[in-house]
Length: 222
Image 1: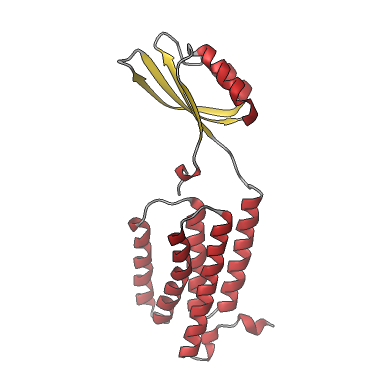
Image 2: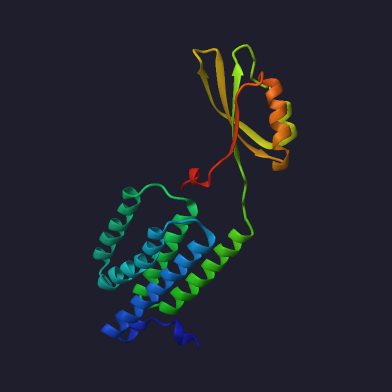
């Protein structure tokens, strides 16, 4: 039983071994791409990249096998990818590390370990996403108040009643300084009570503009 976890390259390197490792890496990438399609809203190009990336990593590792200096140079080249790409969501970066680890394992000949690892981690990520593990829905609140209103603490009792947490993130003036625009990030206790919350805010700010919107997940990058 333990023989299936031995490296395919222990018996020497050949074209058949290379193709087996490459196929294993591609299969791991395909599993990760299916995970992304089921759990997230990633683009088609990103899912294609997840399939190709472990195959590239596998080939590179096979080529530098046994050469420490070349391996260090390749690791440095991989680190440049972070500085050539835009910031991504934490889940997307975790999946990238997943397929790179699978590619490294396949490059070392441990195809079965790479497949088991990819399947297990993908299942864990999928289950956690379905269970909304760690989910915390945040909202952005923008309130316009007149300059005559002492806004420091003016809404604290409403925030205590309708929110679990709140923080003033931005303050700016408008209309030549006669108005203030306050921006808050908050977590609502009950999203169904939004209308009552806004009605009470309108009574405090003189019925000026109020904007409440859900904070986008894309703002939270790693």
